Image (cartoon, rainbow, N blue to C red; front, side):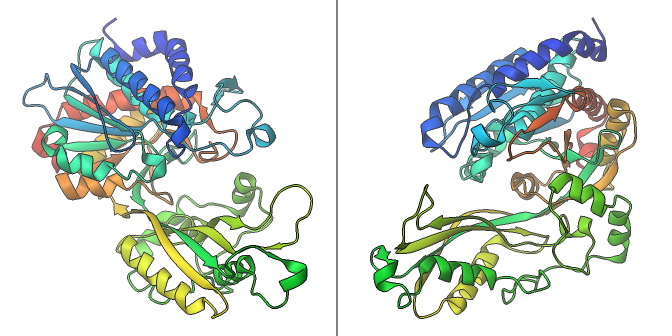
Length: 462
């Protein structure tokens, strides 16, 4: 064959089976017991990069999990694209209770492929690798291409910035592409132009030097678990805004123009209820639901640890309790400064009956991508060719810290070319990847590589 799109048609079933093989690997980066599985996933990604025509493929060691790198630089004078993704996945909580099928036994059902990592991000980076393969085997790649696939994204990429900084010449490119986001719907693709940053913290409250019997000491000891809940509750105002002094100081107001653009892709209450299953929306009433989940900062509690939670009863006053807390941040907010502000507020809220400690876990900078560049226009056309309709522009509520890293270190446009759906259930039970999105994603990436290959490096950089 000489047509990469016809090649995709012929290989569709084979590519789905190969993706299933990758999903079967339990590459849970946060669990040290799964380090061998994480490495096995890295080796399989490297194998597929070789199959996609990359002339050089390397697995680089880091202090924790390896980075997979592949390149083909056989197009002198053409632009160079750097494609980023990750092969690690989130843990699975209570799979026996919440997952309809085993999370690491991928199953096709109603046009979807179910399994942990199917959408975030194994399926999406796999689509890009297979798009490169389709071009390499049908006329050749039209530009220079580099792949950077890491194994620590789900734990905040603690070693990625150092790796990029120490391998700048290896990774230097004219444009970067990341496929780790969602489109608006199967009918309407979207290009993400803004991502929120992240500050992730652990708040610990301690009281007595050991667990105490509540019958003997209850009523005289301020229960650390109760005190922690009181502190956490006080971090929000009744209207849903965040009660941390200075938290909003650097938050830019949403302009009238941007509010109008956001309103073009509204999140209705009925759709919100369908996707969340919650009884009623919550949050800042002066902002729309779409604005709350994409253009406003947040403070969320992800877990409470402390005391007795086993079967039956145990009347214990715990010596200490912890909470996992994160903030999603908008442009101009500094993750380290937010940590300092929260630390100071927790200190103010801590009564003299207990002690508190705030420990940072990871950070991520917010990012905004200019939407008027030549590279963005190439992506718009690629979606039209690969998806069959023009994309809309959207903010994304999640965080991808490497976007800001690429922009800061290489001064290049970073395109967020995602193929997932908002109801894919990333990080949750029954995660899925719509197989039509997988196929359209491969077509979109082929079109994008072809479009960028027709441009000069200067044009791509804008």
